[in-house]
Length: 310
Image 1 (cartoon, helix red, strand yellow):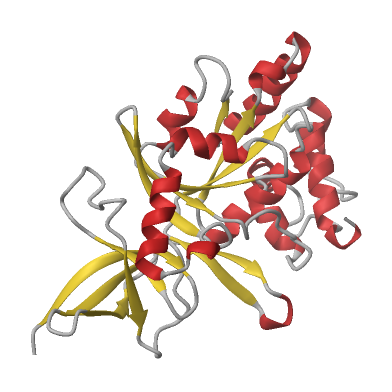
Image 2 (cartoon, helix red, strand yellow; image 1 turned 180 degrees about the vertical axis):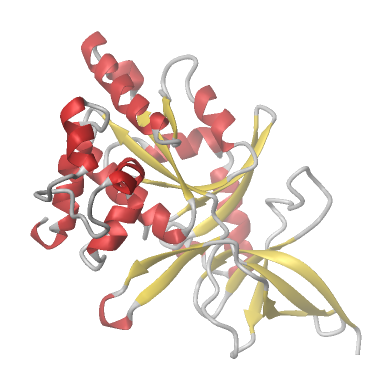
């Protein structure tokens, strides 16, 4: 038998057919973005998703390729799939890039929901406010204030525009050597940002289609794309399935743990199980009153504790 083994990245999962990109030394990311082929996973393997690193076994004589092993995931992004429990959407991300914009409006509640999702997935969040060119002077100042709140908690946060200079330069520096997926409400410009990062997207989807025969489905599945733009190397996952997270299934402890500013202040609360609402000796309440914790952040926190009412 003429079998060879090789590590690869899962680019997309179409069900019976998986698109994979074998690791090479052809570029600085180690993967040729146009070198995509079809592989069949062993039945014993768990659900494989875009971003997974796997081991391929290739039969040179038969010209077949199968996935025989899933390598350890650094992270996995999941969503609640109702009665079926948690379902993996993507693997080995480092960040959720949370995009908001005015218009349609900077939705800090949605940003906070995605920050909780990132925390649950064991990855970081990158806050992106797009359409800077459409902001008035006052709106820009308000956007900067919001970004400063997130920066103070250790999140990377940038203000960008896909239409004017300096465009997305600030975002590019944050994407270097990171793997992200762009999330956010409709109309905030996620597709425009992705278009700037992947100007050859049609060529890439064509390569996936040619490899798998799934031409009509490349825009409806989650795909991993390596990119190099202006000297910056990174990866992004384009995921139609990641549009909005519900945190209704989270316990109050999960919400508290995902709010960095509230979690840090809570270390000084009188009671270990403080809800930060009515208890005496609550340090969170003190910091909200003093402005150390933004009141809108606290109000979002309270809403998410009562997520079933959202």
